Length: 309
Ligand code: PPE
Figure 1 (cartoon, rainbow, N blue to C red):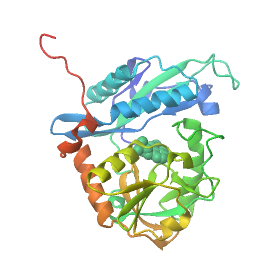
Figure 2 (cartoon, helix red, strand yellow; figure 1 turned 180 degrees about the vertical axis):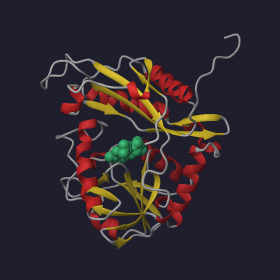
Figure 3 (cartoon, rainbow, N blue to C red; figure 1 turned 60 degrees about the horizontal axis):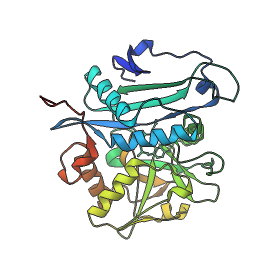
Figure 4 (tube, rainbow, N blue to C red; figure 1 turned 135 degrees about the vertical axis):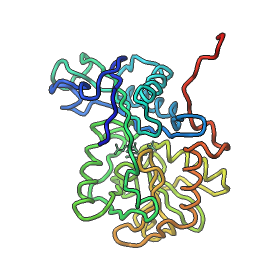
């Protein structure tokens, strides 16, 4: 990976190589961490962070589900993110805040372990490869199911929950596919290993409701906003595997994946980057790169003190 100089840890900057934890860190053993993935883009107005507040609010919700007190407000965390970007002199980058139960007593009861908070940033190119943005990716429906809401809360972006995605990702990759798509225990489409899924049929967009165990993705929300603004109908409905096989177009979206077309699912060709995906992808990239003022408020910039204030 491409490293940067400094990582923000519990309020201080430490050198990248010094950002370490003890091997008995609670989160390492039991998965008791929550995190975010955010992207910052170089725009004509400086480095803008895409929907920073929404990501930090989800981080706070994820933390509260696991009974972790962040110790920093959303605006303090936002300042930490902007500062970490600034101090490292990067413009377009990926931002990874993490909140986790640290080194302390062992055992499942975590309430006496410290809550550690860190923010790292690094340049991260196209998640599924540069070609993927044009050619699309080959997906496989995983034999692993996405956990239901009474097993683990899909609304939380928790470290331990990602082991489900790791199993699915490895299985798909071992079988020669680029990405895994997971169904929930009822057989309805949930999401990709690290992306939400959209299906285009007869010009209408369909995506699973969050009750079907997908992460309430912020890119998903942005795509729904953009698509409706462009005049598309968007439906949150239960989807089954044949909805993928018979789709006109399928695409994945997420902070890391941005908008990535799907070329095939289980070797059944889906439309690849068809006209709808192409338009949404183009507008999405215009928005995040600050070239589309209709959605200008989705990019967040550091609050700079004005003279005399
Ligand atoms: N579903 C899952 C399971 C998921 O992990 C992500 C993000 C999404 C949907 C899309 O959510 P959002 O980023 O809010 O639009 N996955 C993050 C982590 C990827 C990783 O490999 O790490 C991301 O895209 O940053």
